Image (tube, rainbow, N blue to C red; front, side, top):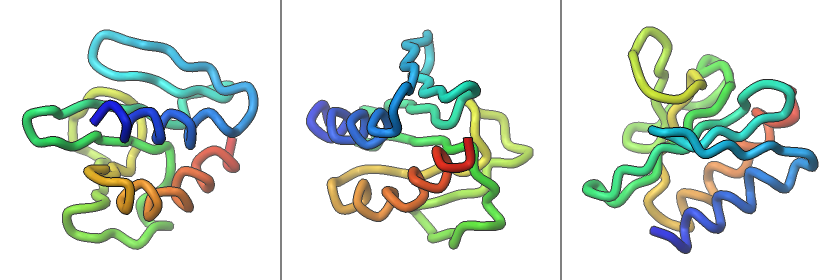
Length: 103
């Protein structure tokens, strides 16, 4: 899981002056405002990535992406992306790109 987070961190910080802030329950990635939040769920062997991206503009896939509007959760962002493998991270790359390009 540490290696997977290292790859995710690299994908989230490649956008230039990204501020990374370790908070109590999540890690925030900011470009002026929060663009992504990372929450660790080691018991489920998954990293939850919340992106500041309109879920209506993304294809929602069962077990991979989820619309979080109106659902309480730590972090910021309306689109949840479940990352459990390097393949999931590759699938998430276009969504990460869209979230940071919107900043």
